[in-house]
Length: 200
Length: 299
Image (tube, rainbow over all chains, first blue to last red; front, side, top):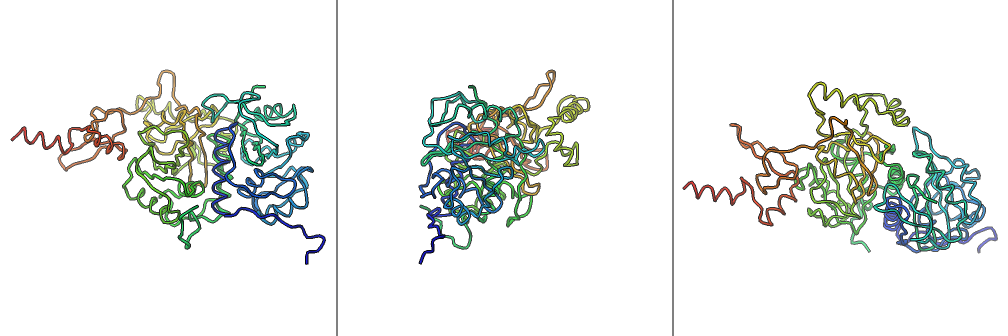
């Protein structure tokens, strides 16, 4: 019989190997072609607090080597249990050590100032921010350019705070240090690596 | 979904945790074009120098829908290319091809195919020494600092010394490039003939160095500039004769020794490109038909 402190867990990938491969190709392509929206190749049932895109990224890339920090709006008992069981990720209280930081697009993004930016000698030792939203929108919003763009593209996110692009722009100025941004919804995924320039 | 039924291996040989580690390194490499990301390179069932870095990158990227092409010095049918292609056939059961345009994933040792690559393709390079400054400064701590400070004067001194000694920049392969205006990068020992193809390439370029445990990348449509001087601009190799089999004048040619009396011929190093040109009816001085024709004339 189920005791009161047991949380029922939704399942992870149907096929761990091939679903992770398909999701990785989408994330790789999103990083290589920033500000372009990709459809998710899988549909999982995420735990409360996380969306399908975030779960796809964390099941693909997360394991015991990647501490995850969850912002309060994502930090549910189900989400913690889900990530621990399916990915084996340590869940952190302190965002400074996080490899992946998960938060809603609607929140105050000043928390990203606490995340690791990497060092000048090891700029790869930086965090990746996963921003959850209802919908990603192509062709509207600010103009992006940089490596991976054959021509500048417009991209924005539903319900984004006004400060989002100033954070992205300030982050780009730190290049090669800095955060990489992955935007997720229940069916879409897009990314803005630190190399992408934004014209607000 | 997949017709992969070989239960002796995981799909693409590597275990899933290794793939995740390589995949995370690949994403950082794409986000920081030209920067060498350290990764925990595994032992592979073949010796270092056979492309263990490229194989690990390919194994972390390849999916059941991919069509794989493997080339070694431009050729699809030399030992290294054949053994790596067999390796992935055995461990993934993906379709393989020699046709550049048909491949979604191309692993290469030291050449970029002559047929221009397109958006959506991925080119994986096998890299022996990823650090362009290594032969100038042996200490990793120092080269890392030089990259951090964008201090690349030493590389220009090296190219200058080439000019003062040989009259021009004598570096012909592993010719250093600057990626997206920031990192100086070793394009792996490809002939400098291929450097201009890296600039603004629509395909994603991934580099894996197994022994040296580094992964780096060039995203699509990224500026790649070969280092040079205003008065000694970068130039690529030229040949005095066309390919002896297909008559091409614009491709990279290999010199093939024919006998011990100085006989030689120059042929395209890209075997598939040369073959498809011959099938289109192009011929050169040593084509079987041309030889027959000249013999007939002599008779």
